[in-house]
Amino acid sequence: MCFGAHHSLVGSPVRNQTKSNIKQRRDEYADGRVKQETSVAPGLAAEVPRAWNSSTPRAFPMVSVTRAVFGDLPLGAGTVEKFQLQSDLLKVDIISWGCTITALEVKDRQGRASDVVLGFAELEGYFQKQPYFGAVVGRVANRIAKGTFTLDGKEYKLPINNGPNSLHGGVRGFDKVLWTPQVLSNGVQFSRVSPDGEEGYPGELKVWVTYTLDGGELVVNYRAQASQTTPVNLTNHSYFNLAGQGSPNIYDHEVTIEADAFLPVDETLIPTGEVAPVQGTAFDLRKPVELGKHLQEFHLGGFDHNFCLKRSKEKHFCARVHHAGSGRVLEVYTTQPGVQFYTGNFLDGTLKGKSGAVYPKHSGFCLETQNWPDAVNQPHFPPVLLRPGDEYDHTTWFKFSVA
Image 1: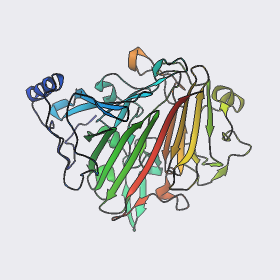
Image 2 (image 1 turned 180 degrees about the horizontal axis):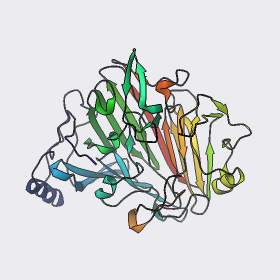
Image 3 (image 1 turned 90 degrees about the horizontal axis):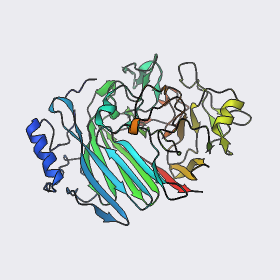
Image 4 (image 1 turned 60 degrees about the vertical axis):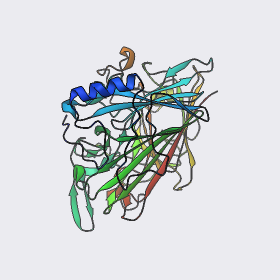
């Protein structure tokens, strides 16, 4: 993996420091001496109060936010920080490398908390070849056919990193860069500038990803502004297992997806262009199905498909997953027109995760709220182009409860 210079206008107080400086900063964190405010580059200032920089938790309607060092990038390229958001119902750890959710603790019906997302305890885990655990992916999530698209008469070529296609922003997408954090009263906002031509995409893109906590709800907002027309499609790629990460499979999870149509795919998982009704197919998840029995009944190796949601910019219900054993429920709401339901088909047990867990096939599921895959090449799909002067602005709500 290449850890070249981090192309960002955003000032990081720890980038390019010597090891002794980084150690000094670690010591300052440890004894609470860090007082300096996080600087934000002109044009990236958030419409939020300036970040506080302290090891002391701050309360906000029952939400505390703490920050700590998570690890250092190779060659003095910067320090990755971890932000822990905690309410009475949830505890979420998010790092500044890829805006990655590394842990998410949810209580069961007995009030016992378990971590329900797959991932790694150490930063090094995220540097190995791994399937985007918990990260924000972009500039364009999902697949673009043959890694090419044409815009205003010009053909753009992207890195090919998934069969014949380009996946999740390319070889060094948004999941493999250091973002600049700013602490909020009830969450954390990350920002970066993706330079013109990064991974083959046109135009400079300013991006903000904000995580906030409200009781049992984790809210993720994505905003972006472009200097020239470019495709943009951002999502979070968390793998959930409501029985607790490290549980062997998700077969006992009951899944509902509020979609009347889905996108059939070719052998390279690119949509064929057809928008197919779910009625009478294995993709009809409008009423709850128990995943293991459902896959068996329809002889399916798993899901890795886009389900077509309401085409509304308003918040709408997307999916519900219930784990009867623990009582945990995850409901997803979004402003996006699609959700990629993925059942961890490519997990193979070779990755060692938190607490020594291994992650075999079907040991986690993703609900990636997003635009439809390959929309830049399929004009009848919802528009994916962001033009100068417009703003990309989408929100997804992950609501946890017990039943």
